[in-house]
Structure formats: C-alpha cells, structure tokens
Length: 75
Image 1 (tube, rainbow, N blue to C red):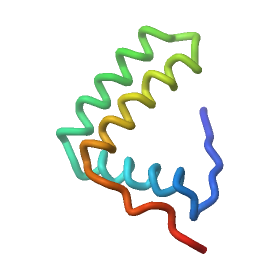
Image 2 (cartoon, rainbow, N blue to C red):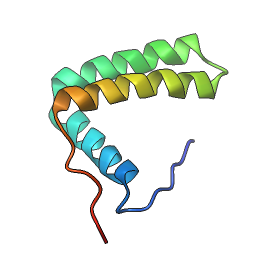
Image 3 (cartoon, rainbow, N blue to C red):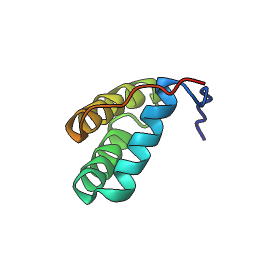
C-alpha cells in the first residue's frame, strides 16, 4: 500500500481530486491510464520510485489534456 498525506487546501489535493474525477468520468482517460499502469508494473516490479515517476508523467499529461486547473483553494 502507498499512502499520500496532503493538506486539503493544497494544490496537490486539488490535483488528486481532479485526477480522481477525470478517471471516474472519462473512459478515454481511464482506459489508457489503466494500460500504462499495468505496463509500468511489469517494467518496474521492484522499483517503486521509477514506477511512480513514469506514472506521474502520464498523470500530468492527462490533467493537462483535461484543461486548466482552478488552483488551490484558500482556507
């Protein structure tokens, strides 16, 4: 298991929520992401850092394609 702890009002939180919503609502994003995750798991079965870094590139690309962010919320 891998756990991230972030402040709810942070940009990281906003990005996590945006990505979650994107995957839930967009088959065109979800299916390629699933495929990439499987490929990366096979490629980096014992290198969590390399897997995460490669996956981050895909996530950033999907978020960029989805449109601009609204930014972190102020609390």
